[in-house]
Length: 490
Image (cartoon, rainbow, N blue to C red; front, side, top):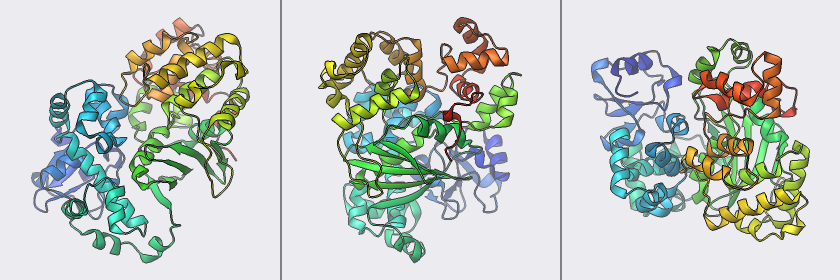
């Protein structure tokens, strides 16, 4: 979008928050960059130039606006809508791969050369993978500076910097303030109120957001010991690259409150990225709802409760296992099966608030399970053992870098995997916004009540008009039922 100057100028002049994260406005006279909704008086159009990423602004010598804080805007929805090289690279960078494995590791996961990846990112985003990762480290550093009392040296390494000097130079360059000055700007009462080891932050999103099906689905399918709904918040344990964590997510009108407890602060960026992905917070609900509204059958459903998101996951392998456990059984039965695996094979964790007891078992742990101990039919047992075996040995990869169509084909080739299982994994684990479930009983029931075709083939043909947002159409169709997944827990 940043190449459409006229459209960008209109968005800036109207302070339209819907475009936050889509592009960044760099002001030539002040050498700062802002989000489109910056509350400051808009500069003259002749003094504006536009960039596709914060990293590109920083590369061009602009610093972040102290008033609108563009580094805290929602991420671009493009990276969750596309499955090309750039989109997959951006999802990996958000997941901290460059910090952990470097640019060669990023390229290896994508199956391209380092040069190809750098060229593609530079062409579309105006910055290479190192610059994009650097911008992310700066954002993480600012968050730790402002929300914790940690020494600056600890913050530097927790944010992913290789040295304190690099940390100091980057913070000064990006924010035009030293780390100490950034901390001084935060009211002392806020910094002192934070419990040691606990980070409290706000996760922004593009309005509208309907929390009912989003949190309702997560709460209704919660696995005891791993997830729970408590005091208006969805809580769960997280398996992270350097350790583990516990997160509590509370929906609010203009943000999602996030409280993180981490065993290793180096996991902060990854934890935030995975929570945002689980809640689908980088979606563009206006574009999605506008498309679905063109169908006279869906239009009343969208008008009644706009802004539905697709409830996703923080762990793709975990969700795939749970999808198999949920084949042809009730939600309650699926939770029971999963809880037994968690109790027997999950790693225990300490939850200061009680209620959460384990991490969900990893594929390696589940691959060692005795198949005879699984209380399920023989065919599903074979499906389960094949899935966890391939996840454990790397034959099957469900990470954020995967190609949706190719991975769906791999899933369908597994024994016991039909279209429903492959598509629900594509929708909720892989993040495909166009995944569709024409064989789902809830969808077929909703279709019958709304006068839509009820056979899978006919319904799929009818749903072609909803592309590329069929996964969101599924949420609106499911919402016609009184199942607990559609309601925010009391």
